[in-house]
Image 1 (cartoon, helix red, strand yellow):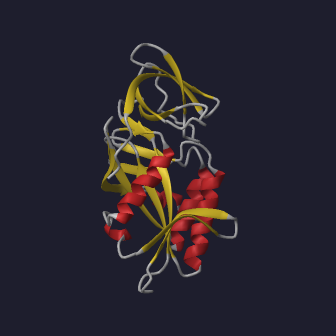
Image 2 (image 1 turned 180 degrees about the vertical axis):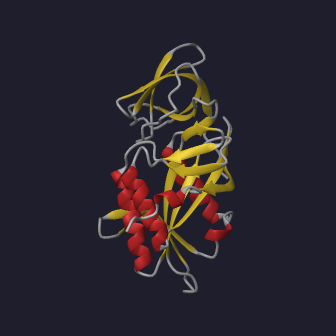
Length: 246
């Protein structure tokens, strides 16, 4: 469902200043590319490992290259372009690939909502009124813990906690709210919350689920030719340890 632009193989060198990455192309030229990922990219910065980047023909871009796929410390492939996660989910919704998201005939992206002035990734509506409005927040997961486990977040995310509070408010207002983990990692079987990295996010997530916010996770197939949503995977099996304390 997600066809990539032409990708160019390279060797990862380093990421720096958050949005820059240096790679070596096939001719061993050092190329600086844009790194479209605001997280820490923990376990996704392996010097000397294979990676792939795309090129833009937009003359206004300072850096024409964009880092797309890297190799993790566990030897798996990770899609680090967070924008592609939203594209994957949008295509899945439009093609009715995900059963839980079918039945809606209106899909809007980046809709302002909530008391904390957020924007929801997708707002799904049913013009017949049979289904409740659905607020869908997408999170890109790339932190590879090995042995089939991925975790989120890879760094403290006050923005992510804010999004969870907004989703809770939507449920309280009678709407449907979903947190969607788009796992751009190969060989992943389950997703858990990284409470040791961001305990506030973990606690807020537990509160969100107890309030009725739905959580789903989908894995992807990743290659230099394409990234596609593949199948639903287990998530948050360890949630009971994060339940709210009285």
